[in-house]
Structures are given as structure tokens and as C-alpha cells.
Image (cartoon, rainbow, N blue to C red; front, side, top):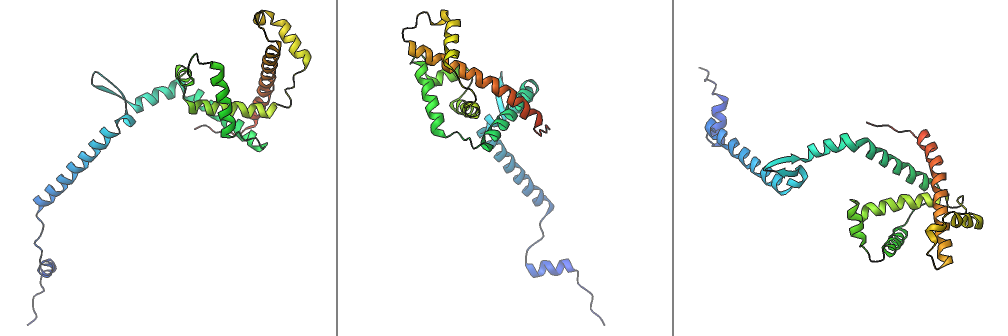
Length: 214
């Protein structure tokens, strides 16, 4: 007479020696896991709250998402255009072998500090404009790249300097050192010529650039 087939589940239980897990135990286990997960998330949110919350007003949070959304609406296009312009300028300069070193930027920053003549620190001057030293370094890299792109074309003659000083006598009426006056006038004229050359050049490369906005 053939033997009855034993239930496979009973055989497994018998072989393993472990009692079946009750449904209630399973629920308690997953509930504990969920509580631990929520606790960890809470700790992380508190630790990095500055990444998610921009401000608290009478106990009510203003999220980073809300802030970024408003900034995007008001300044998004303007900021994006600025970043595109920087990318175009630096790429064009690089193609011509123009790279601005950290040492060159440091030198220009030192000149700026000397011009302030201790009246205000560089950090305070930047803070008043909502800038940091890193922002200034980035701006100087762009400015110095432009200067190197057009420096050879932006020539200044003696007549240019004489005419400028003659047309701006009032600004230099108290000047005591003619060499300093001529040097300042020459720099102003050169910067103006570079600016004029840059505007035309940049309009052309911007027009011909392949730009996709998303």
C-alpha cells in the first residue's frame, strides 16, 4: 500500500527546526524598521536642515525649494545668460592659448587691495556687493582673458592721452604728478578700446554659437 505524501511545508519545518514566523511578529518587525528609518531621516534632516530650509518665520519654514523657485523666476534667465557668456569667453580664450594663472589673479587682487588704501578691507568691500573672494577671482579671470584677447589691438597713442587729459581737465585739476595722470589716462583709454572691441566680437560669437536652453 503506497504511503501518503507528506506536506512539503511540514517537511521543511521539520528539517530546518525553526518554528513558523507569526504574522504578528512580522508586523512588529517591519514597524520597528519603519520607526528606525524615520528616526534616521529626522536626524539627517535636522543635521542638514540648512540644505532644505532657507529660513524660519514664527516657526513656519521657508524651504530652499521655495527660495530657488522664486530666484529662478526673477533671475534665472539673467543668471543663465551670464554663465553662457562666461563659457563662451573662456572657451574662445583657451582656443587662442590664453589661460589666466592663479598667480596673475593674485597679483590683480593685490592691486585692488592697494587701491582701497586701507579705507576698507577687500572682504568688507566684497561683502557690501554680495560677493566673495571666489566670485571676484572668477570675474577677474573673465576680465583678464578679455584684456589678453584684445590687448594688441587696443593701442593708445600719445595724442589719445593728450586729448583725454585736455577733455577732462576738471578731474585732474588737483593732480600733482603728471606721470601718474598720464598713466591713469592711458589705462582708461585702453580699457574703453578693449570694451568696444569686445562688444562687437562677443555679439558675433554669441550669434554663431550653438546654445540650447532647457
